[in-house]
Amino acid sequence: MELICTKCRKPFVKAVRRQGAADKLLSLAYFYPFRCQVCRHRFHLMQWGLRYIEQDVDRRQYERRPVQISSRIQAGEQDHEGTIVDLALGGCAIDAGAAFPGGTVLKLQMDAFDLEPPLVVEAAVVRSSGGTRHNVEFLRIAEDEKQRLSRYILTLWLEGTQAARKGVRASPAG
Image 1 (tube, rainbow, N blue to C red):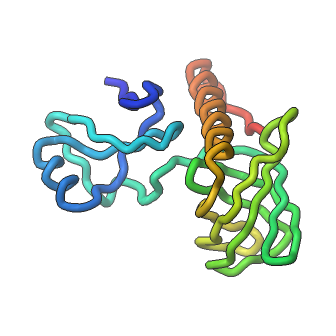
Image 2: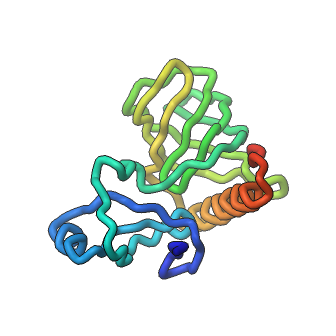
Image 3: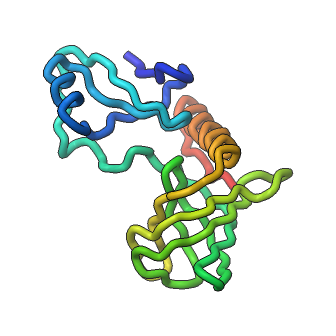
């Protein structure tokens, strides 16, 4: 059975961790929380006879997709160039020319679209770093930019699905 979002009807959903007593009670009746990777909608679906083990469910709410997107990174007054190497609605991984410690707040401009202005994330925080590769969580993004990001993520999911059906590996977008 293919799981689909109850809001946007797209098949790109992911099981997410239970939050609070209501989720735990619902799971006793085989209703588990899911999140749409395209429209961000969180909802419950019945999975009769299945038991989701919390350790098996990734902490990330959104699954990242591989990309190669040029980006401009602002950390305080400093500007840096970087490359987004994977992307989701809630964050990304960046290869940057600079090292940023965990907790650093950044502003990102991503050149995701050929004929449109850069996609802007007003505030993102570095959650972890390994040299010049940083895992970043988006904190603040304007509503219209969220819609553009959602549209871009949908194309990444569709490209990956089409490549999987053809039996080939998807090439990074950018």
